[in-house]
Image (cartoon, rainbow over all chains, first blue to last red; front, side, top):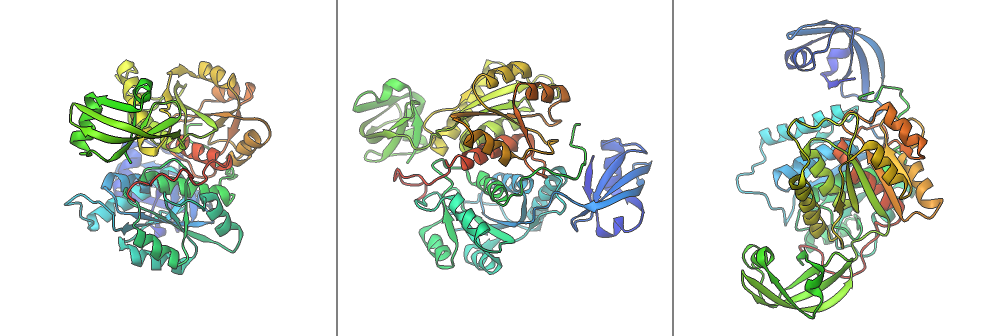
Length: 260
Length: 260
């Protein structure tokens, strides 16, 4: 069933009206017909199953058949502090991180961040990142669109993260603490409803950054002997954290899987 | 330290000579100089640290300073049977899967594989996939280049996998067995030196394919309520399997991390 995020007001009544690009997409691109069902998400973590009644490219009307809690939101709130890297890599981190269960992305300017000249982070760039998060959230059956904030300088990002709860820094030079040890410590030895993960740029975090992180109580952790590309780290750590937290269990909501 | 796979004979002697595109890359692209060190891998799982003596674009000479077992190869041999999907997605699966620790890739033709017209899998395509695996192996510090085989029809791939050991099929419609339950079963209840993972196309495996897999003893497993894109599944399952097998522990070989 196709899923779309809409403004909160749209699903307030039993009868739903969709216009603009969403109506166009339903009528012209997906070619859905009256009688078929779609899922609308208002970003609150709840979702409505809507049966289509009228389908035209300008206006789609439907009736809410069911309202339920969206099963796709992890209880563990993951924030990915991703070092600024060339744009295609950052986009992969956001897309795959959303699929894996990240709730908030914060691009971070690090000492070794190499960003091509002219690769300015303006409102248009942020808008693009948000669109990638939104589309990935729809496809992966999330109940909320992950927030894309920042960008922040490293020190500010660290303060921000530390104030919110435990912090793990993925560090390829760590020789003692494994990601398993760090996740076990964070998830099973205290009440953790959130976890922040820092991922460095292609050249890694600087010594000074690691010293700062350590002084603020962040746990540096090794992902093992293989070196992952920067854009691969966030999604994999998110998956490992949710695995360790017991949140990769089968969905019980009975909704039909894609393609079945 | 830069890492390169070379033919087995190259590192047979204490003195090493490199020519052709590798010499060009070292001299012109990376601009390394006499005195600097590189790591050469002959694909056997061992690696040589070589100190450069002479560097020209046509010929690079060096001396083997150290030979050691490469720390980047997992003990658990992972084979990813990846459904044929459009080429960019398959390339992502191979690149990220190599980083995560996959040893062999087998593209699989499935009932719902959607491959664009003209997207022929010929020797040139296989060559491209092998180059992606090789470059990802060099960057991620693997000790061997993952093998890219196939493509095989689903039934043949299943027979191939079953004959080699335990098989897990990532299936978004699974409502009972989690990936954790499947991995725990495979890794902790028997001697498993290898594991095969099947990942379906964008439309999922067909009922008939799942029936065949189940009849042959493959374990279907859910990755949780969020639906990952097909190219994200293999790398994440590989990481989870190595996490569960205790193979994401810090590297102890003391080699310098990149960028430090």
